[in-house]
Every structure is written in structure tokens, then in C-alpha cells.
Length: 217
Image 1: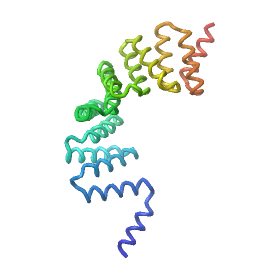
Image 2: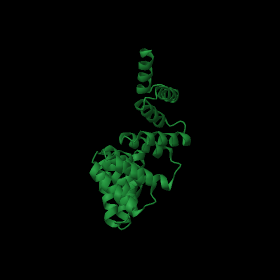
Image 3: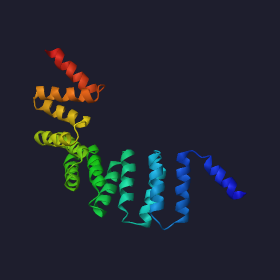
Image 4: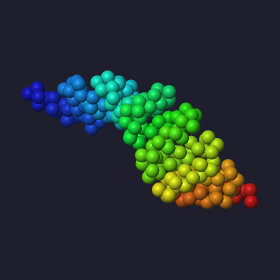
């Protein structure tokens, strides 16, 4: 009877609650398995419950100090909390433990970018692209980092590489347009912003800048 009542109570939970309950049981059943708290942490991360997620990622790391995925996930939580120095440290640990984890290089690059450390961001993106050169989003992120570092020609190349791999990537077209505008290449900038509006008709910056250009004529 008790088991039946417990099963009914479990079934009445919503899917998110059921997932938490499932992995909470696994944590109790397998106290020395780092996967259990890691998966519970991922569940909390999906729900935006940062403190709980961080707690279980730390628990996974305490069980296995070389668990790269847990360090990476902890970095994600810290970055979303805007705790950038701590996020960078967690991503760096993930990258060192597993140098082939492309996501760690890209997310480390984004954290460095947010922190205004553009040279470090560039280095992280370049490392990630050496592992997988076909990641359009990483090429686009690299382009933004180059642009922020004032390396405009390199930014044009990176955005071009992104677009060559995914011509529907709005951020790459928008970034390229901004760089062209900064270089005084107005016609090329307008063409890119037109592409942005074709892909994303409600894009505010592209619409405003194209209107501005028309009003100047």
C-alpha cells in the first residue's frame, strides 16, 4: 500500500518535478557516482534554478575532481549569474581536463568576451575551431571578438567563414555589416543589413540603419 501511494504521488508531479525526483533518488542510491549529482544539476540548470544546480555540480566534482563536464556545467551556471571570473576559472578547468571539449573553448571565449578580455576570447575561439572548423557560430563569435579588439580585417574574414558555413546566421551578417560600416564600406554594409532583414524582418538595428541611410540621400 505504501509503495502504491508513493507511486501515485510520483505520477502526480509535473514532468520537471518528476525529473528532479528521479535524479534525487539516484543521488541517494549511488553516493559515489558523480554522474548522479551531475544529472540532477543539469535538471536544475534546465529549470533556471542556479543555486541548486551549482550545489550538485560541486558535489559531482567532489566525487571526481577530473569530471570535465561538471566543471563546464558549473561554468555555465556562474556565467548566467554574471560571476565571470568564477565562470572563467571553471571553464579553464574543463578545458585543461578535456582539451578536446569544443564547448568548453567556445563558452570560455564567450565568458572572456563578456569580461572585456578580447585577446583571451580570440585565443579560446581559435582553439575550439582547430578541433572543429565547421562551427559557424564559433566563427561568428570569433568575428565579434576580433571586431571588439579592433582587428577589423580579421573580423571580416571570421564573419565570412561563419556565413560560408551557415548563410542563415543572422548575427554573422549583422556583425559583418557593422564592421563594413566601421571601415566605410557603406554599400557592402547595406547589402548585409538587407540580408539581415530578409532573415529577421523585425531586426531593430538593421531596419533603423537602413532607414537612416535612405534619409541621408
